[in-house]
Amino acid sequence: MAGETRKDIEPGMTVAVVLKKDQKSGTLTWGVVKDLLTSAAYHSRGIKVRLEDGQVGRVQALGVPD
Image 1 (cartoon, rainbow, N blue to C red):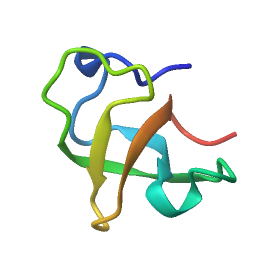
Image 2 (image 1 turned 30 degrees about the vertical axis):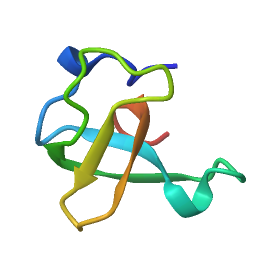
Image 3 (image 1 turned 135 degrees about the horizontal axis):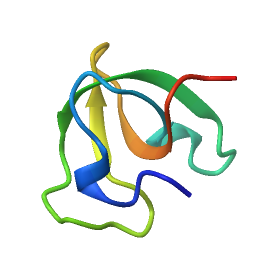
Image 4 (image 1 turned 60 degrees about the vertical axis):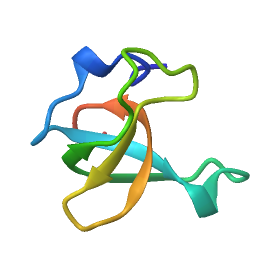
């Protein structure tokens, strides 16, 4: 899984995140990173970010959707 390392994620990147409400289903939401919320260099479940539309989730994939 991509998105576990903070140095790989920057504001402005397109990423797929799992929102809190979607953790059980694993549904991915695509968006553009506004802020990085996890201060640690690594997180096993994904770095937490805020998207430009205000949603918060943990990064599961980097890049654009297929």
